Image 1: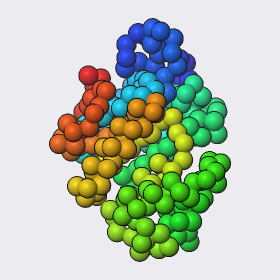
Image 2 (image 1 turned 90 degrees about the horizontal axis):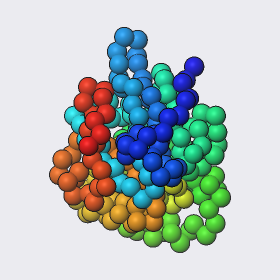
Image 3 (image 1 turned 30 degrees about the horizontal axis):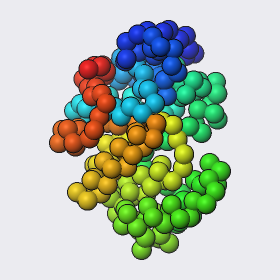
Image 4 (image 1 turned 30 degrees about the vertical axis):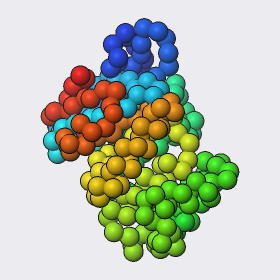
Length: 235
């Protein structure tokens, strides 16, 4: 059973703050074990609306485990996660409605085309008039000519671009991205930086992981954290 207790703190990396503002994303005592292996040590963190947090660290350090636990895709061994004040487990529908996650290796429905994936996400999140925005994103990401293709026909880079598009076409207050530049070309990386800056300026809380130090330095990050041996170091 998860420990869902919440504690407040004035530290910017903890699950609360002195001003009483509800963080867009908060975690308390979040950890993950695989048997005797501690993949993620007990962690407290908070990301405020409008913050863009970059988490660096080498491969295998625990970055992906952290994001999987924060997204709800991997149940933590201990701890709680809140999205805009909603418990990710007790209030899952409300929390997930506000949370978008772009994994390092995105998965898609084999029987849906690129455009049908967009329609599915838009309908699931009750987005009206999405066609114009989706068309613009398809052109920006170089996916317009591939809009009627199925996932198996897409390259790894195109699949990552589709995952980014699906996160951008719907509303969210929290955006998680795991190694979002791992298969992007330079032009798409620049576009991603612009989109992240615009989302942050619009009030979205963004947390992304990367081991690409050049990209980490180029992003207009509010904070930079680091994961080493399963321990999150709050800078």
